[in-house]
Amino acid sequence: MDAQQRVAAFVAEHEMDAPPAFRLLDLASEVGELAKDANESSAYGANPDEVSVTPDEIGDALFALLALATSLDVDAEAALDEALEKYERRLDDRGEMSSGEGRGDRSEGDR
Image (cartoon, rainbow, N blue to C red):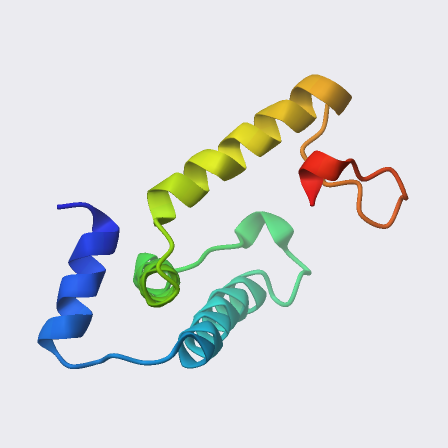
C-alpha cells in the first residue's frame, strides 16, 4: 500500500473526511510549523547552517498534503512524476528549475 492509500485509509477509518478547502488550510498550517522549526533552530536566520526541522513535523505536512491530494482525487505519485518531468525539461531547456515567473520568459509548458 502506498503512502497516499495509507493516509486515505487512516482518514476513512477515523472518520476524518474534510473538504479540500479545509485540507488546504491544514497543509498551510503544517508548513507553517516547518517554518517555525526552521526559524527557531536558526535563531530566525542568524545561523542558517543550524536550520533543522523535526521529522514529526515533516510527517504532519506530508500527511496533510496526501490527504489534500486524495480529497481532490489527485494521484500524488502521478503528480510528482509530472513535476519531476517538468523540472527535467526546464533543466534541459534553460539549465534551471525555476518557472521563470516574474521574468516574462515563462513558456507554455510551465503553466
